[in-house]
Amino acid sequence: MAKDPVRVLVTGAAGQIGYALVPMIARGVMLGPDQPVILHMLDIPPAAESLNGVKMELVDAAFPLLKGVVATTDVVEACTGVNIAVMVGGFPRKEGMERKDVMSKNVSIYKSQASALEKHAAANCKVLVVANPANTNALILKEYAPSIPEKNISCLTRLDHNRALGQISERLKVQVSDVKNVIIWGNHSSTQLNGEFISTVQQRGAAIIKARKLSSALSAASAACDHIRDWVLGTPQGTFVSMGVYSDGSYNVPAGLIYSFPVTTANGEWKIVQGLSIDEFSRKKLDATAEELSEEKNLAYSCLS
Ligand code: NAD
Ligand code: LMR
Image 1 (tube, rainbow, N blue to C red):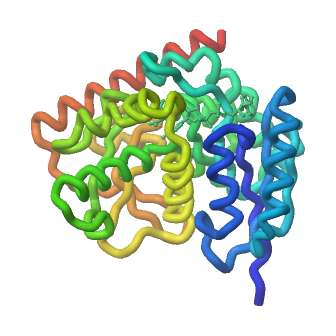
Image 2 (image 1 turned 90 degrees about the horizontal axis):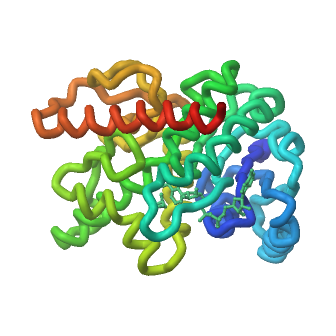
C-alpha cells in the first residue's frame, strides 16, 4: 500500500542551499524512494518571486514522489502540519567572518519561528537547524518552543562529519564508503574537534567561501538529507554519525547546550554513543568547544534582549 505523504518544511527555500535541497527531498534522497512528500517552502517577501520560480521548477521536474508544494512567505502556513522542519532561513557569513558573526541577524529568526513551529507543526515534528550559528540557533529555537520535546531539536554537524570522511578517503586513497565512525564534537565552528584532520575540516567552510564567493550549498543540502535520513530510517549496525543534540551531560559536556555527539539512531530516536575513551588532548578540545557554546548562548540572549 502506498505510504501517506510526509510534509517537509524548508525555510530559506529560495536561497542557495534551498535550491539544492528541495529537489533532493522530492527525489526521495532524504526519506527514501518509496516515501511521498509534500514540500512546504518558506522565504521572506523580497524573495517571494524567486521562491515561486523554484516552485515552477519543481513542477517542471515532474518528481513522482512529490505530492504537493506549498510556497509561502507566511510562517504559519509554512509550519502547519509539518512532520520535518529543515531550518535553513537566515544569512550566510562572508569571507573573513566567523559563523557566530551572523548571530545578531539570525538568532531572532529562530526565536520567532520557534513559536510558529510549536503551535502549528505536527506532533512529534523533527527539527534540523542548518542556518548559522547552527547550534545556538537550535538552542534558541528549543528554549522558545518549550513544548517541542528536546529530543526532536537538532542542528547540522553532518557536513563536518562528511568532510572528515572525505578528507580521510582522499588522504588514504580509500573509497569514502569504506570510512566510518568519525566524530564531530561540539560546535559547528572553528573549535570543533575531529581527530587528526582538525584544521582542514574546521576551515573547510571558509575555504569554500573563498573559492566560490558563496558558502557551501550542495554539500550542505546533501548532509541535511543524510542527517534526516539516518534519524528517521536508522543508522546501519556498527555505524555512528554526528548530530548536534541537546546535551544530557554525557562525556561531562554541560547539560543545556546543543552539542554535537556521536549518535546511533533507531525507530526515529537518536542515542548518544557511550563509553568512548577521551584522551587529554581531546578533553581539552571538548571543553573548549563547550565553553564557546556557552559564550554563544550568552551572546544570543544579549542579541534578543
Ligand atoms: P542564502 O542567502 O543563499 O539563502 C538564505 C535564504 O534564507 C534566503 O533566500 C533568505 O531570503 C532566506 N531568509 C532570510 N530570513 C528568513 C526568514 N526569516 N525566514 C525564512 N527565510 C529567510 O544562504 P545559504 O547559502 O542557503 O545558507 C543559509 C544558511 O545556512 C546560512 O546561515 C549559512 O551560513 C548556513 N549554512 C550552514 C551549514 C551547516 O553545516 N550547518 C552549511 C552551509 C550553510
Ligand atoms: C559551512 O560549513 O560550509 C557553512 O557553515 C557555511 C560557513 O559559513 O562556513
